[in-house]
Length: 261
Ligand code: NAP
Ligand code: GCO
Image (cartoon, rainbow, N blue to C red; front, side, top):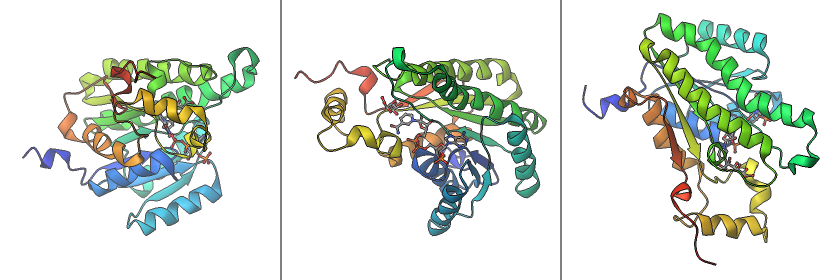
């Protein structure tokens, strides 16, 4: 196999969670461009329909499923449906996620638990659902979408940082427990990316915008396009000896003390 062939995903089935739009849509599109057959889910029927239209417009024959990633029986049902419709899941991208920006001492424990449930427990539920099939077929790829908050804290994101820090260690543990079954589990840690989730931080005049530009050597917000190559690499046999790694796609934020004001 040539080095270029090792990036091909032809014949593979990929499930990307929460991929009607945003980072998930970009990741799924990249995997499709590399040859994978795409399954994705959303919790909201309207968004799922809009996502299907967007995939069709991009020339991608994706299959969409309504599923709340925190609902284990629902996830198991979705995986069974995907296996019937498309075949077993070879590549799982745990992308679905939420954030709630609230000072910790004011945060309702219900909200804290919801962030942990979606951002950390759900990747466990999805991975648990696909690993048996991957073992049967001799291997697979799991990619967990981590965050700068897998490494750093900041005001108002305690639940999210706890979840994403835990997701980094879940990634390492899946790699440790299933590496011998030829399952590679890695993370992608996006920096600050232009998506609906960060839109409140990018509103005109919001101080966070200039803050992030000063903290990013690339001096720009990331775009979902920046994440496509790393996703194909970690989903393909080009990364068969990469396991338990979080690949930060952050324009250099984690390496940089920040521009002098
Ligand atoms: P987004 O625009 O808010 O999209 C999140 C997606 O997750 C939506 O499709 C949402 O569906 C889905 N989702 C949420 N809860 C769900 C549930 N219970 N079941 C099924 N789907 C659910 O977020 P994004 O910016 O694209 O981020 C995607 C991932 O990247 C997240 O894990 C996020 O933490 C991570 N991340 C983002 C950034 C960034 O700068 N944007 C940086 C680092 C990491 P609905 O629309 O129906 O709610
Ligand atoms: C925030 C942002 C970040 C990004 C991302 C950074 O409020 O700080 O939403 O958390 O979403 O996770 O990697």
